[in-house]
Image 1 (tube, rainbow, N blue to C red):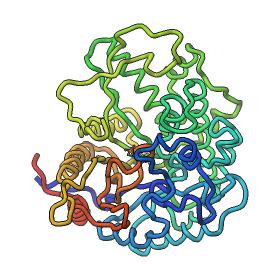
Image 2 (image 1 turned 180 degrees about the vertical axis):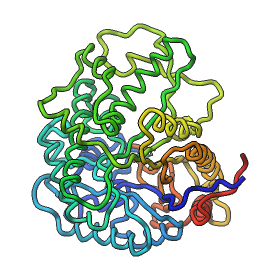
Image 3 (image 1 turned 90 degrees about the vertical axis):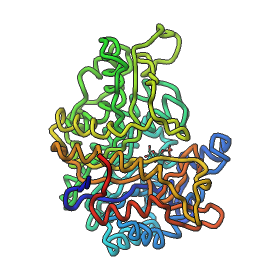
Image 4 (image 1 turned 135 degrees about the vertical axis):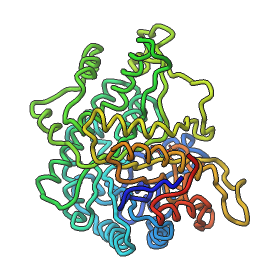
Length: 463
Ligand code: BGP
């Protein structure tokens, strides 16, 4: 069967500044929390590879954009590095950074590739973290100004803006589960960070609306559908709580302009609510978006808790559910994530039925695989597993669109193997293989498949 996608469908991929640019201590850039953390605790990072060099986009942007063109991308998302553009977070704009981002944007446009830009992809300037990071209201204000600077500098050519990439991840990593700096474990502080992130998002959206720019603004959320083990009421409640905490804590404010009452009640019951100020609700209501980016990697399967909570343990989302390992599930063993293509359809259906069918696109989906060298054939990585992964997800996406979902595109994570936070270069995600020693780039089989799919606006596949 031919899986044909709507006209002008966005085909492309996503990346982020910190994971690709490199030059982390040059070009006038200041340190992020990642540079700082790596200097303090390099053993936290796979093979002790830090963020200094990553995939050298800062030097090789022209060559990389030529590769995007070769992969038939009509759109591409990356992020601006706040610490490169405004090194102390609030003061002078770095002219070298402006020149760099102008080159990237202009080259993308010259190659017929629509730039999508994210303002914050996990890379907190250290100077801002030292002022409290997202726990501080001052940082929220500083972010609003940074956003405004970006719109003024680049908004004449960039028409698709995203305030945050996966804003819940720094909350989880930095304040609950110890996989991002500052490695705090404290739910109430996590809730404050999440709340202030929503305020910062809304401040940026408000600045965008006030400036009368000619594009659109949204946010990128990692949505993880919560599937209960069974239809038993206790399992359903567990799934409802997981959904409230991990999905709706950001989805509802950005689409509906307010938090789910059940979530507020839950946090109030456990005395975990962040401090709110008069005017916050109006600001959040003004943060409603034009376009939702959906990052989908894996579902979340839950069941009711088997055991009582240890009342002395830190309050955690897991007070309300246990993780459930569904028998027969398909795993990506390298990343430890379940592969479940129907999840993409379930997300789109939920948005269509419960959120008024917003304009959206798949902004990340992908498969990280370790030691891909073993799949090399005649000098090319034959990553058929990645082609299968993408086409399986695209089939479910196609079904969602056929049933009326307003999904406008599909971006893969990612175009070139890049640095994955604490995992360094362990798992490779790219359409393009990166040889770390020589920085040579070579297109994998999946890159060729994707280029053909984008050119044909679809692909032939089994039903
Ligand atoms: C998303 C992030 C990306 C990227 C990707 C793959 O959560 O937006 O930055 O890294 O996941 O995950 P990982 O790098 O952790 O394997």
